[in-house]
Length: 118
Image (cartoon, rainbow, N blue to C red; front, side, top):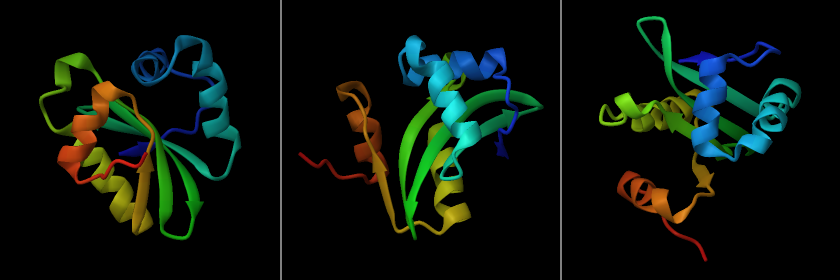
């Protein structure tokens, strides 16, 4: 995993973020990752190719929110999402992780051990 720090968004990263947010918000969200110290965006690489990304907002000691998580459609059966979440948990020694999501991704998070809050 590699933290993305380039001020200019790579086309593959733009494409990945389009899976996780509306296209009209991508530039603004990417800019927030580059400018705000509590926002981090990481790329998951396979053979020097970005195939996934995860963006988080650090909320304080041992807490964060997953803001975006996406994997190329051709790589979605390789557990990359889980690997990215594990990386974040270990890197920041997190005890509490939030993930705001749509109905489509609820089952993924439940399988990973997240609990729904209403």
